[in-house]
Image (cartoon, rainbow, N blue to C red; front, side):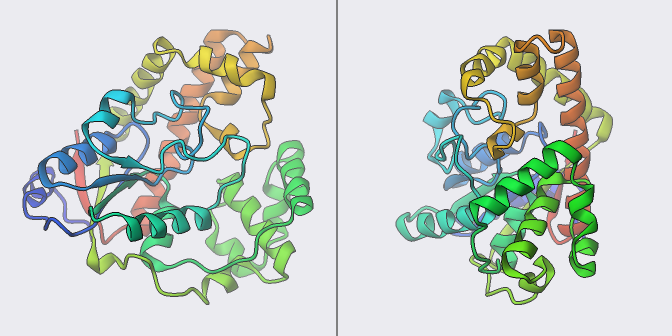
Length: 301
């Protein structure tokens, strides 16, 4: 169970050994990056991204990647290092982390909102063959044209039981694995090799935010993103926009692109983006409660 209480977590920060990996998970806009920076500056370490959208270049503002001021305060890794038009999986991320751990003498402070990254890191990841381009393209078209429910209905029973039915990209990934290998994702997961960083060797924290407080933060942060140039960022991405790309799942990107194309008003785009972000945070909180019960809770506010 989570060790409840903000004070407990803050006190524990001073007790973390200088070489113990730290894992900080949390929903969007919960302040996890600020906590990671605080730990790094007080106790040392390199901050490593564990957010599936912050790995891409192109969408810096909308994915809330650390700005130049934060980057100058402490070493960071795996932020914006993947071209926005390329695919990137949890397997890619795990290999990048493994390479980083081999080349740095600093302990990692791994921070992000992608629960699957933390699960793969601490529990291991099956070595699944890459999805052929034709199968990926077919899956992209199905998701965009008809939604993900059809693919969900075609999964084997055990995979369908485990996958998040509200997450289109996870459903699509499971469908791709099944059609590529002839084996369900659940079967692959059950033959998983040892983890890169066993949880017992780490100190894990989950940001435990009140829903209303977090929703207010989400709305405010999106307003700040707009003031910081989010629409101009979307304008730069517009000529090469492809909704099927992973990087195009950045919260707010489809909505701002739709505004720039004259399909919706700016006020409607902003409202839709804020709603999508709140819905995403809800899915994240559900994942953390279900999958990360062994992590310490950092209660907010």
